[in-house]
Amino acid sequence: MGGHADEREHVRVAVIGSGFGGLGAAVRLRREGITDFVVLERADSVGGTWRDNDYPGCACDVPSHLYSFSFAPNPDWPRTFSGQPHIRAYLEHVADTFGLRPHLRLNTEVEMMRWDADGLRWEIETSKGSFTADVVVSATGPLSDPKTPEIPGIAGFPGKVFHSARWDHDYDLRGKRVAMIGTGASAIQIVPAIAPDVDRLTLFQRTPPWVMPRTDRAISTGERWLHRQLPFTRAARRGLLWGIRELQVGAFTKHPNRLGLIESLAKANMARSIKDPALRDKLTPSYRIGCKRILLSSEYYPALARPNVDLVASGLKEIRGSVLVAADGTETEADAIVFGTGFHVTDMPIADRVVGAEGKTLAEEWKDGMQSLRGATAAGFPNWMTIIGPNTGLGNSSMILMIESQLNYMADYVRQLGVLGGRAALAARPSAVHAWNRRVQDRMKRTVWNTGGCTSWYLDANGRNTTVWPGTTGEFRRETRGVDLAEYEVLRGRERARTAVTATATVSATVSAADSAPKVVPAGAEEGAA
Image 1 (spheres, rainbow, N blue to C red):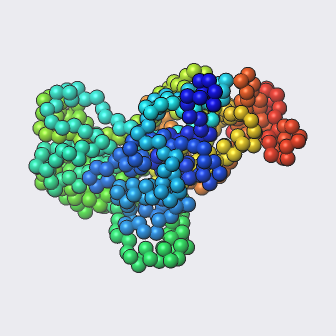
Image 2: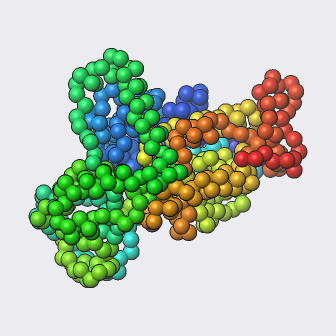
Image 3: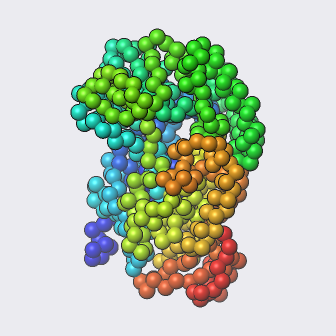
């Protein structure tokens, strides 16, 4: 080190976040032989959303054997649908098993990342000092920063207020009048968990969700023994769970009208517990099932039928002292307010902290909607990529499958930089980013998420679906198997010279290298299609 750079630690790769995406990236880097990396985590432990969300009843709605890494199978999942403590423990186990602890920088929040065009590296300012890195892998995830609506009068509320993702375990809800705001995936787990203990629970519902039964059960000791002794049984179980969900994708993406049977099953699930016709009418959605996330619970409707639980079929409009006023005029007194109002998904806060090659933040680049190349890289942000980026979400399967596909892409990205040799960077071509997103949005037009008649967190402020992948996980795996260098520009040296790389780039630029570097041609050569 020398000069200014001497004061900062330099690494080959900086990974941001230590949830499934960040830990998965760290494991994959080690498997690629790269040990010169750090994992920057703002909290004091790993786990991501499964560390932050520890509210009562928190559990996964994807089967355990599918909601885990293929390279780190767990034969000892205790239930078919795992609870938050077991998933968090699994992630701690991954960190230990794969030797990731030395790479972790806990209690280190990223405050700003700036692209140094001369040095072809990222300058990263954190709460614990600064780093520089050749490559940044952002794995902060879409469910990391809670979204709390600005309700008039909330500052004057005399009771307790918190978000489901920041649960206050020091506040005892027993015997209290509690208002639950929202009816999303968190709320339908919280309501049955706290309803038996509170004096009164009032649920504010803007839009009713479709809720299917959650067929959760304990996995027997015999099953677990079998999965340990005969690993192919565990793999078969995972494969069956995956295959069933792959077969369902067509109904969501191409033939939403075929979802009518699923709606009938959801209505039957409701009718088993909700006998009051008026309440049943309030709980019945008016949009096609699947347009919003389908929720799984066998306890939600029974909880709503309890005598100490009230449903207000209207959003919260304002607060007057301890009185909550709904949009329909309903007034409710409460001692505590719990917001189950989701996260900043289409406006990820990390985007304000990333400054690219043109001096603009990622948030400014994405002001009209998030878009990236293959869910990973953004135009104007060389050597920067994201895990669980735009249009990589799922409506019916495990996000771990999508994460692993993106890890394949990340590994090849870093591999290609090594093949190029010297100080080099890859910058996604705007034309490739736009072509990819045109394809995605064209496919999105007939999906249930766009045609189902609802407004969901899948859509951004412009009504554009920048969240969900409109295909199978198998398709996405094929699309991200490797980096197509025709979709990128190669940046080299302090002069920031740009060169275009042909789609068949396999020939050495210097002839002396043995078929390992891509052929480099002058800038202005024909760009490859996405």
